[in-house]
Image (cartoon, rainbow, N blue to C red):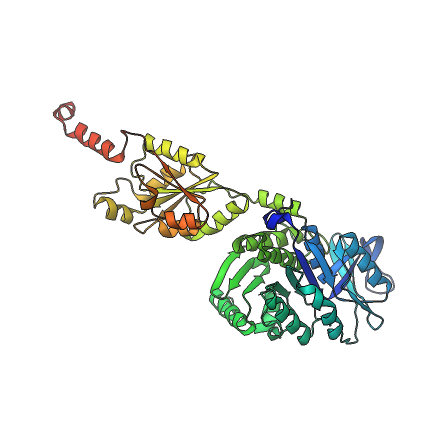
Length: 492
C-alpha cells in the first residue's frame, strides 16, 4: 500500500478533481561551448528533447504518482500540443474526460532550453484571446463534483478561473462537505472566498497583501487578515529558504525549516506541496504530519531537473533518511511536539513516564528498561528543581536538574528527556499524546495524572512495579546512618 494511502479509509483510493490551467512543458537539452559569430548569443548544440505535464496537469500527475484516482479539468486547443498533453495524462492514469477543447484556444506550451542542468532560455506559447467557458465548465462539473473527495484549483491566471466558476466550486464543495484547496495567483484573493485552504508561496502572498516586513509577528498578522478576508480555514505558506508554515484561524499550526540539500530546479515544487497537502487534508495524515510531508516533498522535487513529481516510495525513503537523531536527547517542551510528530509519522509507538529521579538507582534503571520495552520510544518527563522542592521539601533535590537530565539521557532505554516545571506533567502529556502512559509502584490508573487524556486519545495506561527494597529514600537513610554511626566516626 502507498505510504500516504495506507492511512486512507479501507485502502480505497481518494478521488480528487484537479481543475486549472493546463500547460505542456517542453525541455530541449544540449551543450553550450561557444558564442555565435552572427550575434553575441550562446549556441546550444541540441542533444535531446522531452516533454511533461505542467501547470494544473502537474498537480494531477503528483496525485496520480501518490496513488490517487485523479480527474483533470481545463482548456486545451485542437492542436498537436493539446493531443500530446492528453496522451501523457492518460499514460499516468489521469482521467481526462472533463477537459474542454476549443478551436479558439491555443494549448499553452513552455519550452525550456537547458545546458548542464541550468536553464538558459524559456519560450512561452500562450493564448492571448480571452475565452469564456464558465457555463460549459459548470455544466460539465455539476453532476461530477459530489462524487469526489477533494478538489484542487490550480490557478496560473491563464483564463480558466472566473469569479462565477470559483463561487460555484466553493458553494458546491461546501454543500457536499468536500475539501477544496487553491494554489492562487494575482492580488485578488477575495475570489477564493469560502475555500478550505490556500497555498501561496511567499512571493504570491506578498503580491496579495502588499510588502511585508521581516518580522514573524507582522507575517502572522497579515496571514490572519487574509484568512478572515477569504473565510478560509488554512493557509499553507511556502517560504523558500525559510521553509514552510501552516496557519489556521487561531494562528500558527506549525513550521518546518527548508530541507532541500541541493536545489537544481524549483519548477513544480509548489504543485507537489499542494498535492501532498491536499492528501493530508483528506485524512491521509494529521495536520502537523501533513505540513512535515509537504515540506519534505517539495525538498525532494527541487533536487530534480525539470517539472518533476515524486512517488510514495520516494517519500517513504526520504522520511527514513530524516530519522530523528537521538544523540541530543534532552529536549525542551516547546520543541518536543515537532519531534514526536515525526516519530509518530514513521509509525513509532510512544511511551511516556515521569518522575524526580533524584538519585538514580538500579530500581529506576530496571523500571525504565521495562517501560521502553512497551513501545519504540520512551520519553521521560522530569520534575524541575523547583517542582521537586514543592513535592519533596526544601532540602531536595540532592542532584540539580541538569545533572539529573544528563544521567537519564545517558541510559540506552531513554529516548528523550523533557523537564516540566509544573507540579504535574499533564501539560507535557497533552503535547506528546503518548500511546502508552506508564508509572511504577502501587498506583491505580484512576490516580495517575493524564490517564483520562491519554485514554480519550486512543492510548492506555500501564502500571509497572518498582523493584522492592530499593528507593531514593532508603538510599539516603543508609548514607545518613553510615555517616553518623559511632563506627563511621572512629574510621575518620
